[in-house]
Amino acid sequence: MNRDRIRELIQILKSSAAQELSVRDGERMVRIRRRAGEVGTSQAQPSGAEAVEGEAGAQGPAEATVPVQATLVGLFYRGRGVGAEPLVELGDQVEEGQVVGTIDALRRLTDVVSPRAGEVIQMLADDGQPVQYGEVLMRLKPSEGEGS
Image (cartoon, rainbow, N blue to C red; front, side, top):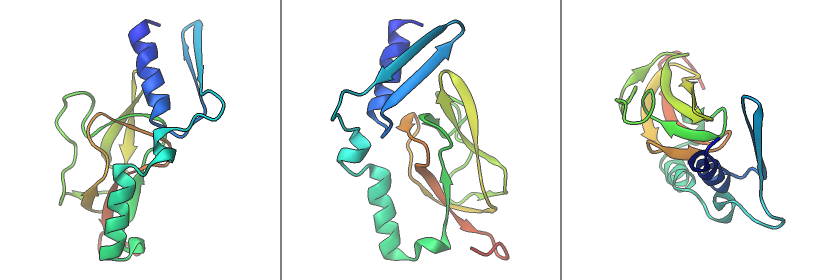
């Protein structure tokens, strides 16, 4: 594992609420831990996603939307990796299980799939943005007949 990759992992840890990050690359393993009392940026101040969610809540009930959440810590891409065309745009209709983005964790792309059928009404994560487990990446308005 090279120094650039380790710096990238440190940035991912800094931007998450996690206290520790362990990475295995073949026979090598790197473990990065926060210092005692150190707080991640996502805990110290609201992220842009949290601020936008608060605004959306004021405009309408949050229960009427479906969150698409990160399933792991990494870098979110709206396409199939760095510089790729976005898989979905605002206003697009998506099906349940459709790939709507990817997360790069340890240089492995993992698909982000839609939990329900619906219309993409909000994009909360930017292309290349570090994300943490459970972070809301986008919101969907469920399709008719889908129920909340």
